[in-house]
Length: 221
Image 1: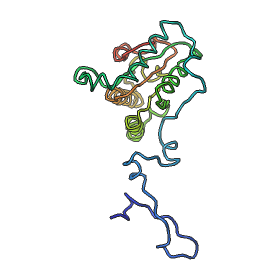
Image 2: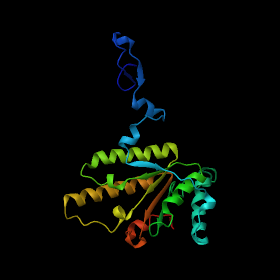
Image 3: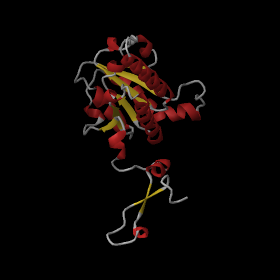
Image 4: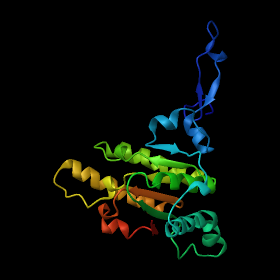
Protein backbone atom coordinates (compact mmCIF):
# COMPACT_ATOMS: atom_id res chain seq x y z
CA UNK A 1 0.00 0.00 0.00
CA UNK A 2 2.83 2.42 0.75
CA UNK A 3 4.06 2.13 -2.81
CA UNK A 4 0.73 3.10 -4.38
CA UNK A 5 0.68 6.26 -6.50
CA UNK A 6 -1.53 7.99 -3.93
CA UNK A 7 1.22 7.95 -1.30
CA UNK A 8 4.73 7.52 -2.73
CA UNK A 9 6.07 8.00 -6.23
CA UNK A 10 9.29 6.28 -7.42
CA UNK A 11 12.00 8.39 -9.03
CA UNK A 12 14.29 7.09 -11.76
CA UNK A 13 17.22 5.08 -10.32
CA UNK A 14 20.84 6.15 -10.95
CA UNK A 15 22.30 4.98 -14.26
CA UNK A 16 23.27 1.32 -14.14
CA UNK A 17 21.41 0.64 -10.89
CA UNK A 18 18.38 -1.57 -10.40
CA UNK A 19 14.91 -0.07 -10.09
CA UNK A 20 15.03 -0.73 -6.34
CA UNK A 21 17.86 1.80 -6.03
CA UNK A 22 15.57 4.66 -7.02
CA UNK A 23 14.39 7.06 -4.34
CA UNK A 24 10.76 7.57 -3.40
CA UNK A 25 9.05 10.93 -3.05
CA UNK A 26 5.69 11.77 -1.41
CA UNK A 27 2.83 12.08 -3.88
CA UNK A 28 1.17 15.51 -4.21
CA UNK A 29 -2.00 14.17 -2.58
CA UNK A 30 -0.01 13.14 0.50
CA UNK A 31 1.70 16.53 0.76
CA UNK A 32 -1.66 18.27 0.46
CA UNK A 33 -3.04 16.08 3.25
CA UNK A 34 -0.40 17.46 5.62
CA UNK A 35 -0.77 21.00 4.24
CA UNK A 36 2.68 20.98 2.62
CA UNK A 37 3.61 22.69 -0.61
CA UNK A 38 4.34 20.88 -3.83
CA UNK A 39 7.16 22.95 -5.41
CA UNK A 40 6.08 24.55 -8.68
CA UNK A 41 2.72 22.81 -8.74
CA UNK A 42 0.42 25.48 -7.35
CA UNK A 43 1.84 28.26 -9.49
CA UNK A 44 1.12 26.23 -12.61
CA UNK A 45 -2.50 25.35 -11.84
CA UNK A 46 -4.03 27.86 -9.45
CA UNK A 47 -5.79 30.94 -10.88
CA UNK A 48 -4.22 33.01 -8.08
CA UNK A 49 -0.92 34.75 -7.41
CA UNK A 50 0.51 36.12 -4.19
CA UNK A 51 0.85 39.92 -4.11
CA UNK A 52 3.09 41.84 -1.69
CA UNK A 53 4.38 45.35 -1.02
CA UNK A 54 7.53 46.84 0.43
CA UNK A 55 5.53 49.66 2.05
CA UNK A 56 4.08 49.69 5.57
CA UNK A 57 0.80 50.79 7.13
CA UNK A 58 2.04 54.36 7.99
CA UNK A 59 2.81 54.82 4.27
CA UNK A 60 -0.89 54.53 3.40
CA UNK A 61 -2.20 58.07 2.82
CA UNK A 62 -6.01 58.15 2.67
CA UNK A 63 -8.88 60.37 3.81
CA UNK A 64 -9.61 59.78 7.53
CA UNK A 65 -13.03 58.21 6.86
CA UNK A 66 -11.59 55.73 4.35
CA UNK A 67 -8.74 54.85 6.70
CA UNK A 68 -11.22 54.28 9.54
CA UNK A 69 -13.15 51.79 7.39
CA UNK A 70 -9.92 49.92 6.59
CA UNK A 71 -9.09 49.80 10.29
CA UNK A 72 -12.45 48.09 10.88
CA UNK A 73 -11.42 45.40 8.40
CA UNK A 74 -8.07 45.15 10.19
CA UNK A 75 -9.91 44.74 13.51
CA UNK A 76 -11.97 41.90 12.07
CA UNK A 77 -8.79 40.14 10.92
CA UNK A 78 -7.30 40.56 14.39
CA UNK A 79 -10.36 39.74 16.51
CA UNK A 80 -12.81 37.84 14.27
CA UNK A 81 -11.98 34.48 15.83
CA UNK A 82 -12.58 35.86 19.31
CA UNK A 83 -15.91 37.35 18.24
CA UNK A 84 -17.14 34.13 16.68
CA UNK A 85 -15.91 31.54 19.13
CA UNK A 86 -14.91 33.06 22.46
CA UNK A 87 -17.91 35.40 22.57
CA UNK A 88 -20.24 32.82 21.06
CA UNK A 89 -21.40 34.76 17.99
CA UNK A 90 -20.77 31.96 15.48
CA UNK A 91 -24.47 31.07 15.33
CA UNK A 92 -25.49 34.68 14.57
CA UNK A 93 -22.66 36.04 12.44
CA UNK A 94 -21.44 34.74 9.07
CA UNK A 95 -17.91 33.37 9.55
CA UNK A 96 -16.21 35.30 6.75
CA UNK A 97 -15.89 38.97 5.84
CA UNK A 98 -16.40 40.34 2.32
CA UNK A 99 -15.70 43.89 1.25
CA UNK A 100 -15.55 45.97 -1.90
CA UNK A 101 -12.73 48.44 -2.58
CA UNK A 102 -13.70 50.88 -5.32
CA UNK A 103 -12.09 53.91 -6.93
CA UNK A 104 -10.14 54.97 -10.03
CA UNK A 105 -6.85 53.24 -10.89
CA UNK A 106 -4.01 54.32 -8.63
CA UNK A 107 -6.07 55.09 -5.53
CA UNK A 108 -4.54 52.27 -3.52
CA UNK A 109 -6.98 49.34 -3.73
CA UNK A 110 -4.32 46.66 -4.22
CA UNK A 111 -1.90 48.43 -1.86
CA UNK A 112 -4.54 48.56 0.87
CA UNK A 113 -5.19 44.83 0.51
CA UNK A 114 -1.46 44.07 0.68
CA UNK A 115 -0.97 46.27 3.73
CA UNK A 116 -3.87 44.65 5.57
CA UNK A 117 -2.23 41.29 4.96
CA UNK A 118 1.20 42.55 6.00
CA UNK A 119 -0.14 44.17 9.16
CA UNK A 120 -2.05 41.05 10.20
CA UNK A 121 0.59 38.58 8.96
CA UNK A 122 -1.66 37.08 6.28
CA UNK A 123 -0.68 36.26 2.71
CA UNK A 124 -2.70 38.08 0.05
CA UNK A 125 -3.48 36.17 -3.14
CA UNK A 126 -4.96 37.89 -6.19
CA UNK A 127 -7.39 35.70 -8.12
CA UNK A 128 -7.15 35.94 -11.91
CA UNK A 129 -10.77 36.39 -12.99
CA UNK A 130 -9.84 35.83 -16.64
CA UNK A 131 -9.22 32.18 -15.71
CA UNK A 132 -12.56 31.81 -13.95
CA UNK A 133 -15.07 32.17 -16.78
CA UNK A 134 -14.48 29.41 -19.30
CA UNK A 135 -16.38 26.79 -21.21
CA UNK A 136 -14.28 24.26 -19.29
CA UNK A 137 -16.42 25.02 -16.27
CA UNK A 138 -15.74 21.86 -14.26
CA UNK A 139 -11.96 22.29 -14.54
CA UNK A 140 -12.19 25.92 -13.47
CA UNK A 141 -14.46 24.98 -10.56
CA UNK A 142 -11.86 22.48 -9.42
CA UNK A 143 -9.03 25.04 -9.57
CA UNK A 144 -11.17 27.68 -7.88
CA UNK A 145 -12.12 25.20 -5.16
CA UNK A 146 -8.42 24.54 -4.51
CA UNK A 147 -7.83 28.28 -4.09
CA UNK A 148 -10.54 28.54 -1.44
CA UNK A 149 -9.48 25.31 0.27
CA UNK A 150 -5.86 26.46 0.53
CA UNK A 151 -6.95 29.93 1.62
CA UNK A 152 -8.99 28.46 4.47
CA UNK A 153 -6.15 26.18 5.56
CA UNK A 154 -3.50 28.91 5.45
CA UNK A 155 -5.56 32.00 6.42
CA UNK A 156 -4.97 33.75 3.10
CA UNK A 157 -6.72 36.98 2.12
CA UNK A 158 -8.30 36.56 -1.33
CA UNK A 159 -8.24 39.63 -3.59
CA UNK A 160 -10.41 39.78 -6.74
CA UNK A 161 -9.27 42.67 -8.94
CA UNK A 162 -11.49 44.25 -11.62
CA UNK A 163 -14.44 42.46 -10.05
CA UNK A 164 -17.01 44.33 -12.15
CA UNK A 165 -15.95 42.11 -15.07
CA UNK A 166 -17.59 39.20 -13.25
CA UNK A 167 -19.94 40.83 -10.73
CA UNK A 168 -21.38 43.51 -12.98
CA UNK A 169 -24.99 43.72 -14.14
CA UNK A 170 -26.42 40.22 -14.43
CA UNK A 171 -25.71 38.56 -17.75
CA UNK A 172 -28.64 37.81 -20.04
CA UNK A 173 -28.61 34.19 -21.11
CA UNK A 174 -28.39 34.67 -24.86
CA UNK A 175 -25.63 32.16 -25.56
CA UNK A 176 -23.80 29.15 -24.19
CA UNK A 177 -21.01 31.48 -23.04
CA UNK A 178 -23.54 33.47 -20.97
CA UNK A 179 -24.76 30.28 -19.30
CA UNK A 180 -21.19 29.30 -18.41
CA UNK A 181 -20.48 32.79 -17.07
CA UNK A 182 -23.58 32.80 -14.87
CA UNK A 183 -22.78 29.35 -13.53
CA UNK A 184 -19.27 30.51 -12.63
CA UNK A 185 -20.61 33.61 -10.85
CA UNK A 186 -23.10 31.54 -8.87
CA UNK A 187 -20.42 29.05 -7.85
CA UNK A 188 -17.98 31.82 -6.91
CA UNK A 189 -20.61 33.60 -4.80
CA UNK A 190 -21.38 30.35 -3.02
CA UNK A 191 -17.70 29.81 -2.15
CA UNK A 192 -17.29 33.41 -1.02
CA UNK A 193 -20.27 33.10 1.32
CA UNK A 194 -18.92 29.85 2.77
CA UNK A 195 -15.36 31.17 3.13
CA UNK A 196 -14.37 31.89 6.73
CA UNK A 197 -11.67 34.46 5.90
CA UNK A 198 -11.41 37.87 4.25
CA UNK A 199 -12.41 38.34 0.60
CA UNK A 200 -11.72 41.70 -1.04
CA UNK A 201 -13.21 42.61 -4.42
CA UNK A 202 -11.87 45.66 -6.24
CA UNK A 203 -13.61 47.72 -8.90
CA UNK A 204 -12.87 51.01 -10.63
CA UNK A 205 -16.54 51.97 -10.52
CA UNK A 206 -18.94 51.29 -7.67
CA UNK A 207 -21.95 51.65 -9.99
CA UNK A 208 -20.75 48.77 -12.18
CA UNK A 209 -21.46 46.16 -9.48
CA UNK A 210 -24.90 44.58 -9.53
CA UNK A 211 -27.07 45.67 -6.58
CA UNK A 212 -27.77 42.03 -5.73
CA UNK A 213 -24.04 41.53 -5.17
CA UNK A 214 -23.60 44.78 -3.25
CA UNK A 215 -26.01 43.58 -0.58
CA UNK A 216 -23.65 40.70 0.20
CA UNK A 217 -20.74 42.92 1.26
CA UNK A 218 -19.88 43.59 4.90
CA UNK A 219 -18.14 46.82 3.86
CA UNK A 220 -17.96 49.05 0.78
CA UNK A 221 -14.89 51.29 0.93
